[in-house]
Length: 292
Image (cartoon, rainbow, N blue to C red; front, side, top):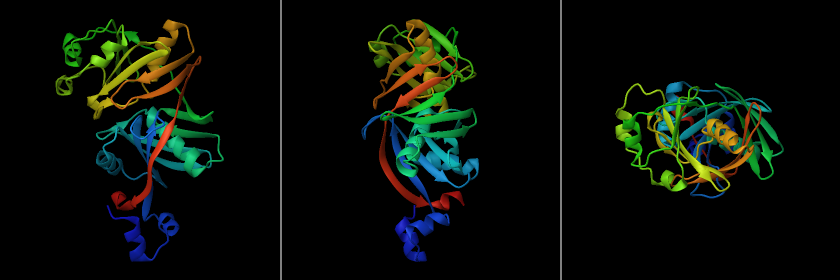
């Protein structure tokens, strides 16, 4: 990619002038659900005046090769439209990249704001500052009992779950294990999982009780993400499941992927509050030629 310094030098532009006429686009890399560099789920956040074609956004997301790249366009001082892309496809709901985009709004663009809203394909997502965290308001999803095929369980590893459910709206399989050690021991064969056709799910969430709440991992090779480092959207069905079982509204969540991350969830009557920290790894500008 051509650097902003080269663009400015050739055309005798200041950085502010180059941004204003669309010569390059602002970019952030934010670790969501973490306070450090090598933890949490990194998301690329791209600020735009309007969305280019789906094909071009997908190509850029593939180039960044993170779990998700978020593209957002301001529509008013308190509202932006947001879209999320994995390396292979557009995603219908992404918690960590929304948390990361809210961090860009609150920490870099409009630090005076305490609340901000995002228009998504799934409706409105409200975000706000919460102590030293950022809070998202997400929908709730009920799970239903489901019999998982033996071939799927075998591809996940030797350890068998105690319970199996399906989240039919988001097309996710939920497997409940009786201890954290079994969750950690899972070593999925992703090529084998990808070979299975006509499955009623495109992601697998595995979970077990923890001393302060619950732990989870999330696998989605069908969406171009073998294992997601930390998954905010998975809590839309895991949080109400554990809340009902434990008779608790407020729960601590640890995602025990190799990077790891943590969050706090609070189950309300018709929505879910997800709270997490963020860490800014990178900010810069890159050549807007990717949109041409």
